Structures are given as C-alpha cells and as structure tokens.
Image 1 (cartoon, helix red, strand yellow):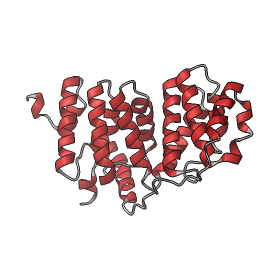
Image 2 (cartoon, helix red, strand yellow):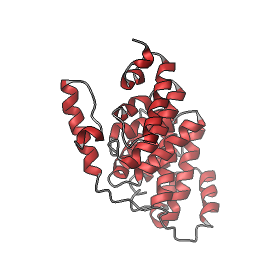
Image 3 (cartoon, helix red, strand yellow):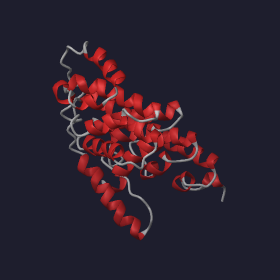
Length: 257
C-alpha cells in the first residue's frame, strides 16, 4: 500500500520527516474543516518532533484544538513539552507560537495552575538547561503581565528569580531582570528585601525603572470558566484504558457517542 494511503495516525508517526510533515499539514486541514480529529492525542509527540516544520504545524493544530477542547488542557506533559521543545526553541516562529499556546491555555480554568507549577519547577530544580530556564522566565513574565499576581503569585518564585539574576548566562540573567521589573508593578513592598541580594548595578537599573511604576496594574484577561473541562479529562482516562487494549487513542468523536 502506498504510504499516502496509510491512515493519518500512522503517517504522523512515520520515520520519514517529509511524510510526517505532509501528515501534519493534513491534520491541520482537518481541524480547520471539522470540529475534531482522532489524531489530536498525537500532538504532544509532534510538538517534540526533530523536524521544525512538523513542530510548527503541530503548534498551529494545537492553537485550533485548545478552544475546541480536543486535548486535556491541564496535561502536565503537554505543558512541559511546549516549554522544553517550543518556547526554548531557537526558531522564532516556533518560540512565539509556543508562547501563544501557553497563553491561550492559561485562559482556561485549571490549566493556569498546572502551567505555573511547571514553570516554577524549572526555576527551582537545577538540572534544566539555560534555554529552558530563560524560556520559563519569559513565560512567567508574560503570564504575570496578563493575569496579575493573584493567579501568577510573585512570592512563590521570587527567591528563585533573584538567584537567576546572578546567572552567568546572559539570556537567563536578562529574563530574570525583566521578570523583576514586572513583579515590582504587582508586589512593590514584598520584593524590596529580596532585591538586596542583587549586584549594585542591577539594583540601580531596577531603581530607575521602579521610579516610573506609579500606576496600579490591572489584569488584562480573566480566566474562563469552562463547563466542558471534565470532558477532556474523560478523554484522557478513556485513552489510558483503551491504549492498554488496542494502542489506539480516543477523541471527542468517540467519547461523545
């Protein structure tokens, strides 16, 4: 049988990068034309693909799948894959789309908690690469700016961020400073003591920025209450059971029958 006649899920997992790319384009067309696709559970694997073209198409698919609830929006593996493989990418399109996916996920109830805890772990644990740490700081700054301190608490990560501001890696150091500038807008009094541990030149830089932080910020977005959230959780549970028997994933089409 010709490879093009093979089922989409098989082509998405092909060893041939060109086949995977063409299949990811087909999946994207499916999601644009229809409400669901049986192949959405494969998106996590596609996000970590070694082919940048496949990664980018997977992100495009994810941006369509999120509002349709075709994935488990609070899946820690999904979130960590976006951070480690997309936000940390050297490809600008992949990085920006990864950021957008996390921002869109954060707007949904329950997901932002998992995203925040995942990002916090990248800062606390020492084993992660500078790219992952810098990417995590960048996302945290974006989420704090968008949702505010009540949903993205400054206090829980402040100590770790100040430590990162002393990093020998310029990207990590710069992203840590960007976060501290944003954090001051939301939590002026609470961060003052921690900043004493910074280098004098860094404290002077922040002092100049803080002098202009007179306005009380407001969240730009609010969390959406999602009555269909448990539906995605049911898909995840059903997939676990089905995979033990057949190895085939379920989608909304199956679960709603």
